[in-house]
Amino acid sequence: MAFELPQLPYAMDALAPYISRETLEFHHGKHHAAYVNKLNELIKGTADEGKSLDDIIKSAKGGLFNQAAQHWNHSFYWKSLAPMAGGEPKGKIADAIKKAFGGFDAFKQKFTQEATGHFGSGWAWLVQAADGSLAVESTHDADTPLAHGKHAIITCDVWEHAYYIDYRNARPKYVEAFWNLVNWEFANQNLK
Image 1 (cartoon, rainbow, N blue to C red):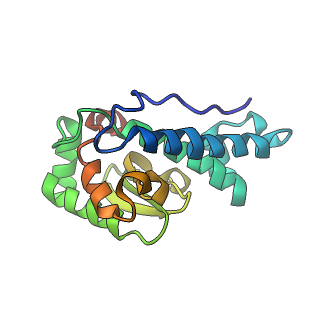
Image 2 (cartoon, rainbow, N blue to C red):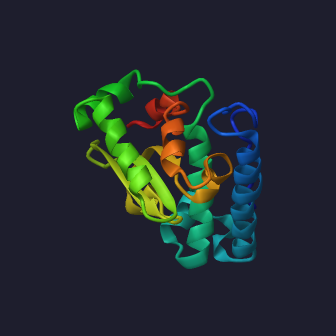
């Protein structure tokens, strides 16, 4: 069974002016597609060919892990964003953030610091541990909370290809723009 590039849950220009159509064309249509294609090449004719993406991530190492995890991470990232979203969270995620961080502003500051301060390529995450507690973390390169038994709530891709077309080397400007797109409905769905 081959993996497929998921359709974006919005139009290519729906995230403008914060993320441009051109960025999505390259980021989704080229980068994410390349991870899916390489993943399919690597599993073809192997014992991994019939496995779920989650199972591959939990057992794979090296190149196979990188391709599978990047496919998972990107698929999750697209859902972490939404047009006409952002602002302060509502519902159970708002309550959980208040409990874990003391309030939205403290959470936003911590997440922003993690995303902007992450050295090199990677991801900033809001995750939930098995005990239900929330934490802000970053992972390097293709690493993902799934590989560490944690449950992802939202993510921000901080690889340069996520923002370079629109923001050049100004990652802080991209992260600032990210807050206008956070899909809190998706976060509420992910919270256990």
